[in-house]
Amino acid sequence: MTEETKETAEHLPAGQLCIESLDIEAQGIAHLPDGKVVFVEGALPFELVSANIHRKKNSFEKGVVTAIHRESSQRVQPGCPHFGLHTGACGGCKMQHLHVAAQVAVKQRVLEDNLWHLGKVKPETLLRPIEGPAWGYRYRARLSVRFVRKKGEVLIGFHERKSAYVADMRECKVLPPHVSALLLPLRGLIGAMDARETCPQIELACGDTVTALVLRHLEPLSVGDKEKLRTFASEHAGVQWWLQSKGPDTVCLMDPLTDSGQAQPELCYALPDYGITMPFKPTDFTQVNPHINRVLVARALRLLDAKPHERVIDWFCGLGNFTLPIATMAGEVLGIEGSATLVRRSQENFEKNQAARGQLTALCKTSFVPRDLFEMTPEMLQQDGTAQKWLVDPPREGAFALVQALADMCAQAPITWTPPRRIVYVSCNPATLARDAGLLVNVAGYRCTLAGVVNMFPHTAHVESIAVFDLA
Image 1 (cartoon, rainbow, N blue to C red):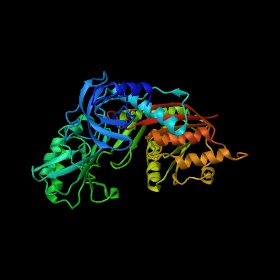
Image 2 (cartoon, one colour):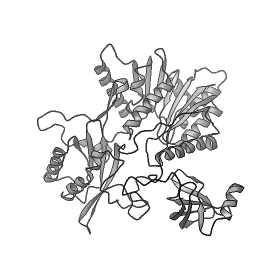
Image 3 (cartoon, rainbow, N blue to C red):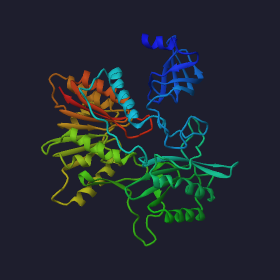
Image 4 (tube, rainbow, N blue to C red):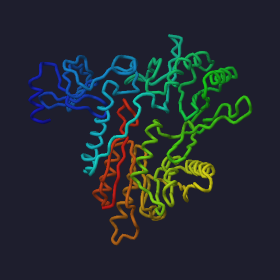
């Protein structure tokens, strides 16, 4: 707490708080005159507010804004009628009351603060944020389903804010419009089914032409219920029903063939800049926001700058979202993932695209291998050989074992293995990126030359980012 902040707090009217900044959970941060931190939900930086304090600890307090005495210039009217602080409000978004440009600025500051405070790293250059549509972007979602016996109706949507109850959602502005328009018809459909009390979830995944709806059912569906699902799909263009009786491995397409006997259209998305089509299953991990994903892939590949004579390793390659585009540029690509099943699927995606491109535009030599990427060792790095460049795209846990193995190899004297000259690191968690960046810069001898945020999830507190590390 600075002296200026303390003086401001001391001169405020009783019960008022001056909001100084915003945390990653979109809570306003203020200080009491004694220096104690107060987190205020619903408040924005530079606002004067009153708050209902509902939690008190020795080092902090938490509350909800009850009145705004001086409003931020960045406060906007939320775009969705289900957003708010009131009881029953949808908990899917946290920042709709903040202008989207200011949301990006907050996320950029979170990235910079994490890199410095956790990793002692300052990027030499900050990249311009990657931004896209603020609404209708969420092509993947897990919607809870609840039959409310007292009301005699079904609710389908995200959970209420800080609650296990399902929000009474009649539309959703962050879902694609055609999916938002399905919410009420889906409520009617499930309400009419025999299994309305044993279907807890619908997971949706939108491809370029297909909308897959995965119905989780705890009991076998009756013949009548399956017919209702088929009728619903026939009335809503592009909808496919997938059924899930137990774990993710049980997910299957309800009707693999159309009424005319043809195979159902494949769920896929395109990366048109590279002539790549990526088939996927509705429970696979793919980026939620396809508009931003296309821009992210293009930026990552520009930063990677792979040449026809270079070998590239794509760590945590998934289904090949980066691997296959890299194969249009590099001389050789190795994709590495933790699951043997996922490696097989990646190989199949590569072969489909290879066949579709033809001999004149064939992809470069590309292979996939399974590795436990959370148990990496220097010996395993040597086993996979050297590469001029790496692309690293880990889950939220980050790539600590991989980066530690690299740092150990770089610390050897003499070095018997050639480290990559450049690493492009795509992150969905600024804290683990910062931790790994600290190892790369302060131990392995890299420079963090570039870093910036990617607004993959507008109106939420999720921070996606990209950073470049060059060997010093």
